[in-house]
Image 1 (cartoon, rainbow, N blue to C red):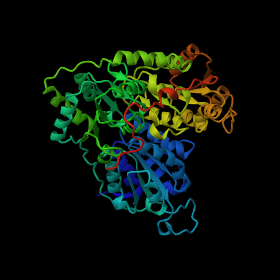
Image 2: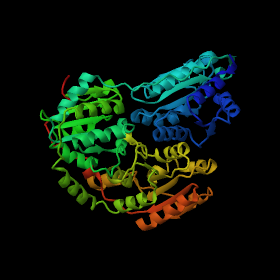
Image 3: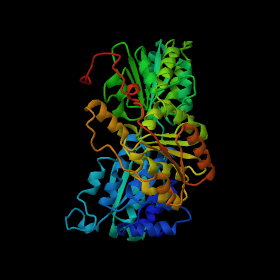
Image 4: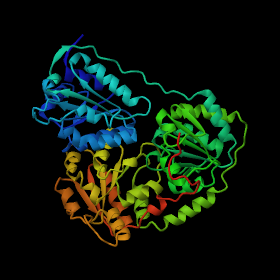
Length: 547
C-alpha cells in the first residue's frame, strides 16, 4: 500500500473517477490539497477563479454539460457559504457536483474558539442542500469517502455532495488503499407497472409527453415512444433538447399548455410536473403516467394513475417494446397544427427578443452550448430558441438564480474544449460575476458573453411599473462601458445595436477562439410572461389533494 497524505488520497481518488479538473480558490485551510494537486498536475488541472461562487458555478456548468461528476474546493466558513448558491442550484437541477470544503483544526470544530473562517456545524448546514455531507477524518478513510460520495452523487436522482476536511487532517499521512469507483446501475421499472402504463397510453386518443432534466440522457428512447404514440413532447428550461426542437413532435411549454387542455393521457419523464399539475390543473379525465428515478418525486404533488420507478432510458426502451406489442396504429394529434399556428402568432409580438435569438442561433454551431441568464431574452429562449441536442441548453431551472450565468458558462467551456459557448445575460445578472472576465483570460476559456443592457433589473422594473403604479425602487442600474470594461482585461469586445450586428459580432468573436464580450444596448423588452404564467385549463383544485 502506498503512503499518502489525506490530500493526496483525495486527489488520486478524484482522478480515478475520471475527474480531471478541480475548480478551486486557494487558502490556508486547503494548502495541502493544492500541493497534492500540483504533484498530480499532469493528470488534473486546477482552474482558479476570482470568487468562491464562481468555483462552484464552474463545477456546475461542467457537470450540466457532461452529466458527469465535477469537483470544486474552497475554504470553510465564508468560502463555502459563497459557494452555497451554486450548490443549491446543483441540488435543484440534479447536477453531480462534488464540494470539497476546508475546515478549522479538528480539535476545535464546533467549539466556538474563534478560529479563522470558523462556522458552527458546517457539515450540518451543507446537508440541507446536498445529497450527502461527510467529514474526512484520516488519510485511511479519505479514498472511501470520495468513492462513496461520488456514488451517491450519481445514484438515483443525481445531485451534489460535500466533503469537509480539517486543516490538520489534509497533511496527515498513512498507508492508503485506494477505493475503486462503484459500479452504477440503471434500473428498469417493474414489468407489471410498465404494462399498466402501456395500457393507459395505448387507449389514449390525445397523449402528451412532458419532459424535464431527467430525460436528457434518454433522447433516442424518448423519441421512439413519442413517434409510436404520435405524442407531442413538451419541454421547458431543463428538458430542452431531450429531443431536437426541430422534431415534428417537439412543442414548447406554451404549446404544451394548449395541448394539456384536451390531453387524455400524459407521460411525464424526469420532471416534477409541478407547474402543470398545480397551475394548469387536472381532472378525472386526465390519466398521468410518471416516470422518475426518484421514488419521492412520483407522488410528491398528487398520486399518478401509474408510477414508473426507474432509469428513463432503460424504462422507455421497455415501454416502447410493450407499446409495439399492442399492434395499435396511433393517429397524429388533430389539435397540433392549430396550436402551432397560435404559438407562432404569439411569438410575432416578442420582438426584438426573437430577432436577437435568431441571430444567436444562426451564429452558434449545431453543437454549440447556450447558457441563459435570468433576463428577458433568456426567458424568451426557454420557449423559442431552437435546441439541437441534449446538454447544449443550460438554464437555472426553478431556482432561477440571478447571476449564475458567466461562471456556469466558463465551467461548461472548460468541460467542452473546442465547442462554442455563448452566454446570454442582462446587465444586472452579468455584473454578479463580471470580474471573472479575468478568469476567462487567464485560463483561455473562449466563452462569448452577450450582455443585453437596459440599465435596469428590467423584469423587476416592469413589474413595479405595471403592478405598483410606477413606483420604481432599487431597479435602475449604473453600468460601466461594457466594451471598455472587457478590453481592460485584454479581451476582444464588440457593440451591437441590431440583430444583424449581433450575428456579425458573434461570428467574429467565435472565429477568434478567445474570450469575448458583445454589448447590446436595448430599451424595454416586451413581457414574455403571458406565454409562461398560463391559466388553469382543467379541474378546480387550488391545493394538492390529501393522500
